[in-house]
Image (cartoon, rainbow, N blue to C red; front, side, top):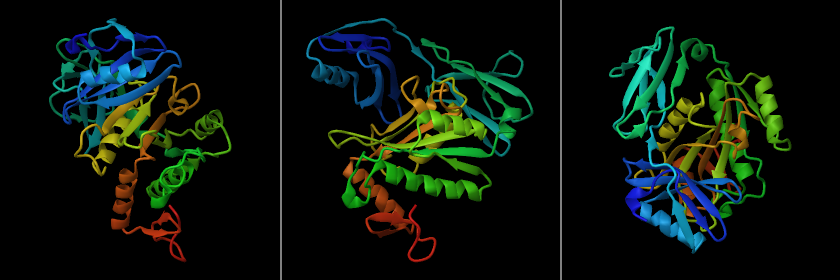
Length: 336
């Protein structure tokens, strides 16, 4: 198979399993491909970084020695337009390099060239690029934005048996993600937000009901990734799909977090915003409203968490009993 003919929609059919490529995103800043594919025998969706497309073919061959492939789709689709607000103006952008963005107040679309005065109007936007399908039309409503609930639901992992490297204080995903949620909660409440937390002994469906009852404008799930070979690193964030009203927020979150990520100068670590679709309950609107799931690195990558730990120490945190403490509270600090 010619590597240049490797497109989303290609089906790999082997003796033991089938894969279909859902998305191939070229990360032009870092010069690698981010491949999202679905394993059809168990419906699991995975996203893996590869330096070039031939590496992905070798990866598939390791899983299933015999395979054939059939090209189904051969056209990329532009990534959606996302927005952020700065000094009362709306900025539009897309992760598709070289695209042209169009926006409208009244379905008469004009090209976006400068920030928009963020007036009390409903804005629609999409982007276009030669030989690409147009992105979906995204809608940004000023009234909805300024009237959003100040309620936030934090949902740290309840995986008490998912262990990382204990010698650097990671312990379990449940413990560390709850400490992270403690810190986030402190920051949010100090900025006027009302914060609610999940009960780890309940189910995702219960958490979704609670966050809906509290009219939460964001349901943020906090997790870490796992790696059987302990060599993977990198962050990613999930929304239900790219048309989600959480896409702009998720993009801003991952971009800002990546600015302080210890390995941002390396390739293969920026995985960006991905679609959870029906495979991730806490972004699935059947269970959760306004869901975003953040995977904060890999729990089993020793160097990554050692570096992250050192960053916190440099910011004034201390180590006690194998854990990290921010120095607040009496008697040596409260665990965060």
